[in-house]
Length: 171
Image 1 (cartoon, rainbow, N blue to C red):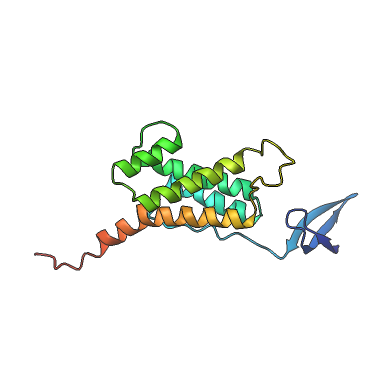
Image 2: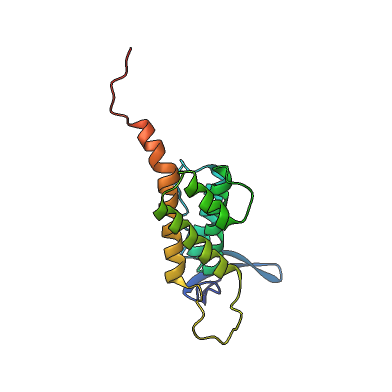
């Protein structure tokens, strides 16, 4: 049996198929079949990359708070991987900058990811406050881009520079 239904996740229409199994119906499949593009550069360490990929999957299903929380977690995993002291993320980011591991603009990006993740993790103090920042698609996309740029500079660019030195090798 096939039916046009409304997806409970995205609220768009789908075509769903079930088959009768004795006295009940069993879900078979639905269309369109979708899968998020959660690709991330392989230069990023696997544990950090796994958190960032989860953030991308959250964004695919419009889980905006989850998106920014997982981006924050990925940046903190990166700070730990880069040997930042086991403190609060705010101090870990500043430590990376003090050590020259990241630049001032990267530090600011990382702090934006941290702040966005904090907003996603905690509800507004006053739910009726019309000026409270709520995480929606625009904020989630910005946090993803800040995270992507951070990883591009911390992991991807240094590996590419190592690979292409443009120097003759001496036999």
